[in-house]
Amino acid sequence: MNSSLRKLAGVATAAMIIALPAVPAQADQITFGGLPSGSISFTGAGDGSNVSVSFSGLTGQAFFAGSVPSLGVFTLSDITNQLAGPQAGGLFPFTATDTFTYTASVGPDSLTGAVQFTVIKDNTLQPTFLGNLTITSVSGDAAFLAAFPVGSLSPGFNFSTTPLSGGLTVDTLAANGGTETATVFNGAAVSSVPVPMAGAGLPGIAAGFGTLLVFLRRRRQRLA
Image 1: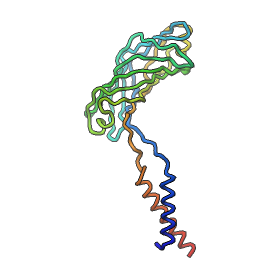
Image 2: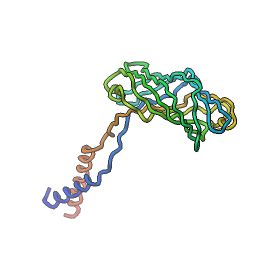
Image 3: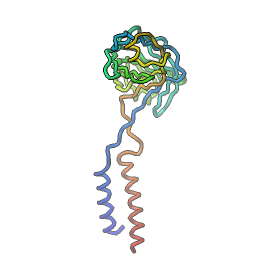
């Protein structure tokens, strides 16, 4: 490579590094909700603001989507007549606590976590429960242990329900009273440990630099 080509490559590479955008990190997660059983009941207070919520026998299939994936079963423990509300803009504050478990069907992966719910998001036929998950015990292979260390807080715990049995929304129940039931449709327990995206950082720069050199050589040949 002659000196002019080398200088041009150096300037272009520096520009690539300076302009390199921040690469978002991914995170392993447990997705759950396949073939669910059990029920979630919503009972409206008839005051336009509040409902009571109960869980009974919630379980179903779950999947750990990590570097060493596993298929298993989730559970959410029962809760009875926990208040949600007063609602504002379709959001029902919900401060109930629960216990979430995941157990792989094959292999050693399993965990237990304490769920602290924060809100139920409504204005939809399939309301969504949002909250945090603190890991209290875990066992499994290295990838699973790294994704969910004991004591870690997962701020991305959430699940949506199937449509309510009578086709109503939770805010309609809050206004009119009555009881509707549903079950878990799908959800996720997202690891608090970020996983860099493949190809990010210096390897990506090196690949880009190699492509740049090929381009510059071809350009030089055309101009010769």
